[in-house]
Length: 550
Image (cartoon, rainbow, N blue to C red):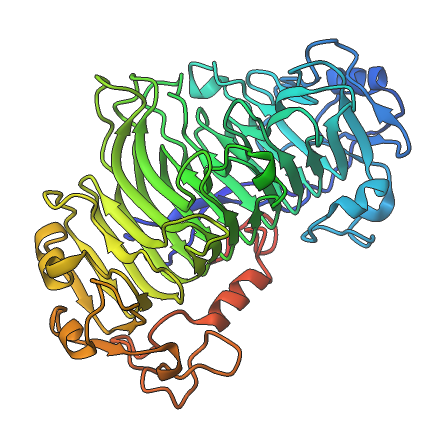
């Protein structure tokens, strides 16, 4: 069998503090029994007795309902050694390596007829849940949802219930592969996949329609898992936070979810939820997470509702009062597109879930590189239009090669004039300056950098001065003088020199290859396209069970 292993990747430099561990998610080649099942009772019996190397084949055209009224299908702790697998899959050959939907191809709702159908038929019961210590399961080609009569589900797939008190008690080595996981239109469906475990992945899947009028909802997330986690090449749709780690205090002491890889996903919200007044918050949020790579994703459709419509939110949070160790640290956010939101990104050093609670550890070491922000702050998403906000004592936040063509509320806001966030890097960016820039008023530019971000590294930035005739309007030369050297100010986007119809610089642009690293100022769209396309090693494997640089 081909094992899933954890291996250190992402940086070839062994001393890089941002390096992460990833999972090899190659499909195991099982050589054990092939167990065909056609009822819910048969499926649970197979799960109760399966051995390493077995494959459980679920008939299509059948609805599998858990036999237990309140428990869901249970992934038992069969005491499998790491690297041994039980596969639970659709019997349809479409999911074979030579089939219609082979490994590394994302499924959609249109593929549901090829899948085995799993339906929970009890209020708040998951369709699948993992026992404490359960390990070695891969779910392939399953349509997982709730019966049409059900109006409330907390976790549709529950991998760890959040009460485990030790790392050894966590479920582990569970992969969801090419599955369609979805809520219903009517009712409250809070979460698609709860990832409270170790070595877990959701790959090539379609996770949609998660919403709860009374609570936050997520497509994928967790707070009491150790990692590594892989979320690769999925469609992820949820009303509140599409992807979130943290949000409740871990029951495992000192636990911080670590080695989180979020790549090549389309992360979106259903526009009909605007009129339904669902509590919309963020597309991606970290409250307690260490060593995270968020790369080659598209994040879209975040409007002011439950919060102010910020697309990306990174912060350390002591949610329940116990987690003084909670921290968000060593996060790499690169080669992404963020579009259609009231605000771009917030990095908040520390927050608590209520007054009087002790603070967590402050967020630190956040790097954002090669990102396109588009349509930030237009009327459809709500008022705002702030591109970046960094505050609360964040140490070492880096923003390089950003292109943002619409952020009317400002470029970088420290929120508090007395706030110190040392170690800022802001280089090689191409951004709009309309009403505000870095800071506001007479303090804009060098004064704000020196007061709120010192020591800082700044330079080779283009500010497009599209200022409306307001109190914040300022002439190009005066604006340029407010900033450190290597600041270029132009009056309109027509002065930048783009390739026709794109946000990529033309070779004739004065800012082509003008960065301090010899690259174009702003984002490299070709690099984003290549990263989103993936390629060999996209599943974290080079050959059998080995890692490749990503």
